[in-house]
Length: 483
Ligand SMILES: [Fe+2]
Image (cartoon, rainbow, N blue to C red):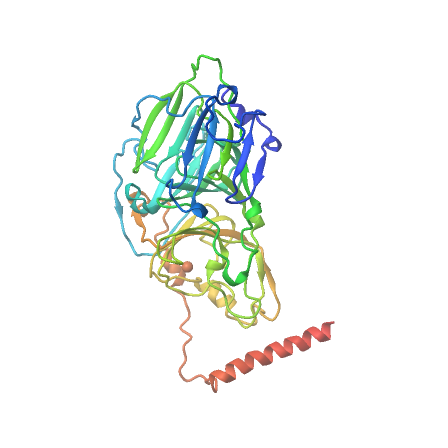
């Protein structure tokens, strides 16, 4: 009976709404102990177990934990031994992965998804590590992955003792079974499975691809909004946490064989259990997995001139100890109105103190004409220059081609960014990947040399501003005329 999740109708998957809430959920009425966490006897003969997301003594506003009421305590398992999987994103024969820093701008085409008739690949087996920084044993740093998969994890579970996992499917809907219930996550959605939560991934089809961000410290939270005010960006009520669901056992003797993988200090260990680890009948607490539909993001942008910094598109952040600086930000560039007048509207040329790894969920990115395609990715490391490609620059710099006197709706695609304060050490697999586009830098080679010191200069900076104001005034006149 352990594959019940796959048979469930998507409409039968239920969620509770909110970010950071303390939830209560029971798959069996009365399974939650009334008024206390660990009574002498739990209802229905269940075991009480606490899962801590933060140190016991963390300030209350940051303190997370949940109480799980389960058929078997999760400690009931065989010895955890080094797994043939090596580490997450490594091949079965690897015990250590080589990493190297490299400041070059990089771009990768999508990894193809193997046919299941050739080789069955589960979520765990299809993960490839792009790069990492820091060390999970010190709870410091992060790692970035992508995955391709064609098969579901069957009677397997995964736990990450190293940190939270943020999963971004790009192709193929997945069902993520957790100790807290089941989430269906499709492209345009993301989910977060926090440190220590057992989960497994099943797919609805055989073509699946996506990205994953792991943080070794802290947890994801909603960014502060500052002058934006109380509302906007990702609204807390749009986050969804599954209701309790438990696998019924084949028999009361617990004769099922489950393999449980644990990533611990970068290494994968495995153990066996004679029952499904997804045996939590009820839970209460504020340490839970969740999903979010990126289409619900309330996007902010400039409505006068100039392009704001991309931090305005932050969905989730994991702050570092330096105020305003993230271990990792998860940022999206969704369909939105572009209203900035007198402005080069795509992202500008820049060099960032942060490192930017980008992926494309669908469509085309507004700073690149081709090349950066769905399922592909790019990396612009700390202080490595980047920006619009030559074709984009040429088009959007020309008022005859792009009229900025009226708003335009960008509906060309959905890109995202994992941005981090850390420099990424790249895996050898990523640096030498057959899908890496080694000619990427050529997209800037044809930038026109348009600097002309003999051109008529603007009389003064004030004149520039006046010219812009005049253009706004004439727009106003045009609008009045239209009305
Ligand atoms: Fe950038």
